[in-house]
Amino acid sequence: MNIDTTLLVQIILSAMLILTIVGYYLGKKKTGKPLLTAISLGVSGIIPIVALVYLLVLLFKPDIAGSESS
Image (tube, rainbow, N blue to C red; front, side):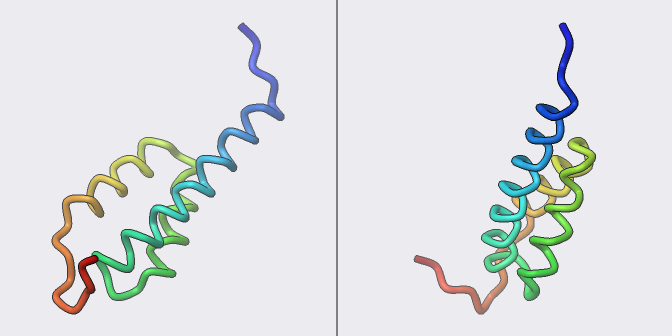
């Protein structure tokens, strides 16, 4: 099975976009700097295992005290 380079790049860029959005949402709830969290999670999407570990760390991190719970 041959995977076209264009398709591979599109998949990686799509994953980076999704990870950036999820990173911003989690950054608002779990850290004090959501923009930095979103950018770093989006860039880590280039290497999927790093992005997965980073995402798991964010998911299991406790919420900050001043965050609004809706």
